[in-house]
Length: 305
Image (cartoon, rainbow, N blue to C red; front, top):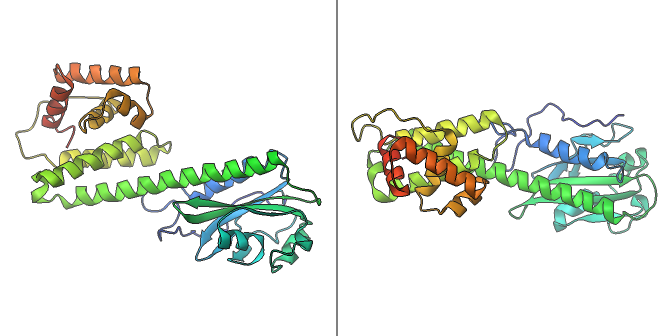
């Protein structure tokens, strides 16, 4: 097939100005986009699926599945133009049963569409915090109404991609905050307000890191979290050597913010009994008899900020 997915080799810019898979080890967002389109095309309800990321008011169709020519691949669709452009303009899904005869869209891209012999087409925006970040298309080569199953499959793919991008954005934001704090090493870090902010960022970073599947990114996040804990080094004599597992530290970081076991379980996506087991193990290794004492001892050991 002419369309088998994949990009054009250029580094695609995200709305925040950085390239996908850039300096913060963020995975390329096009990989997630490609995976969702593949899931739509393999369901057979949409023999053709394609889409791309939004940049500066247009969407470049970098990912294509089931296409028979190269006419759609890398096509740039501008806001207000064609089906995808209308999706960008109105911010909601738009579909047609007969693309060539549709009167509520412009026909700037009839050439590529006719070359693929596409008729029924549905386009869905991928919106994150009110901003359209990508557009997914599903298409059929017959004049038929798009069925509920096909529509639901494309809508679900769009929601999954939106959720994934939102998580990646939050990881980037927390990483940037943590790295700024860790790099500054301000003398006034002991100030109560600054210290509480540092602890909050450390806790959130640990919580997010535990949900990240990319091992390189997860390792980087835990390294930055440890740098935050190390900021207090030098305030006291070097602590005795205490070893806790990564997950035990994650649990204590949430407990340090006053979270209950149920809240810790929700934040770390763990079962409540698992949280209790980690907490008991951490208390035993720290020689602590209460949750509060465990947090104090962990801070004294420079395991928490």
